[in-house]
Length: 435
Image (cartoon, rainbow, N blue to C red; front, side):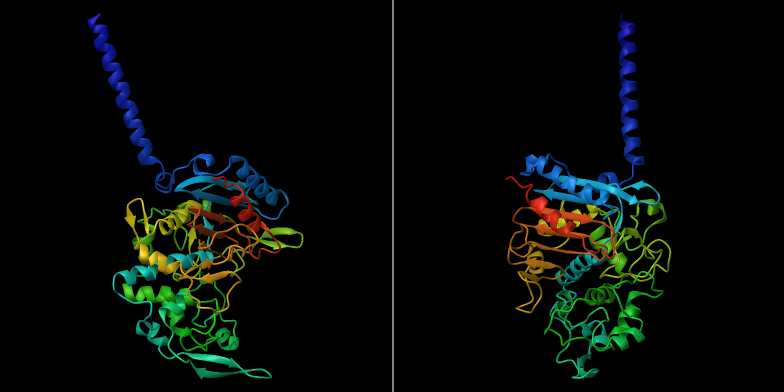
């Protein structure tokens, strides 16, 4: 009897040891993204939202795929710090019959601007710059800029800018710099600087930006909201001030601390089969965009020079990665014990800085994204103080501090055509709030 008990004890210990080593082996061999990117999930009702309401959202998203208006996408809603809803719908690649998954990687285009803007604020907090500084202090090419003034009857005159461009002008898109499509478009075209797409450029972003300084801008600094290369210029300035390439700076100061394990400017070979394909809206439905294409296309994110780090439109990411970044902002600059920014810097970023300049009805612009001032802005529910933006590939995000809510919606559709999914997403997310 004693021997039998001893045998049972030994067997039990061996089994426990085996289970322990199996668990450790699983942890070590499972991709880190499955652990590092996870935001705690919760039943919708536990965070004041409705399962039935989200079922309606799911039905609507699936219908866009059935109707041939979208190939697929990923939607995520985080409330009170927990994932209330996440849905991968449709296909990542229709031609390959590859389903969309929650860890699918997307080109986020202008959603890159928020990370670059945070990078600038990090440098201000370290005392390495002030956003009131003239850009020419760090990029001498911008010390004496010019402006193209249209003439009656056609053409334009080139005049000296009334004042220097400041870093805040760039953060708020009031520097007068477009994507090369202003009055002096001929000069921007001749310099081969037009459009938001940088991934195919066979030179560092700083080299491209340095040539911009000599080109005529569209408006005098501080006089008009003009959307364009401002954040790309900020990216080149970050490189100068920090002494690091932009990808290294953003990775070490934002991406790695926030465990955004699938966010980068170009795609590692090991992740190629997770990148969503890009489609374009046509009269007959959607069709696959050209590969690589320029702007409208698959892009040079897998193959290509991999030299130009576009702070304005160059990053790739996943819905969960981007949600982590937004949660950091919602939490006043910190996430899971990692502080990226001080609370007051976040407050400054999420305040309207346009000072009455024309932008959008009911909205202002902060330091990197729009800010809602009137809840009637969207024709669907919203909150005063909400901030967000989107990307050229038809992605969108917003943070609603009042509702303690983050929404991320990624698709890959350019041009998007006449599709109302953003509006319906907003309406159906807010109708899901019950508390």
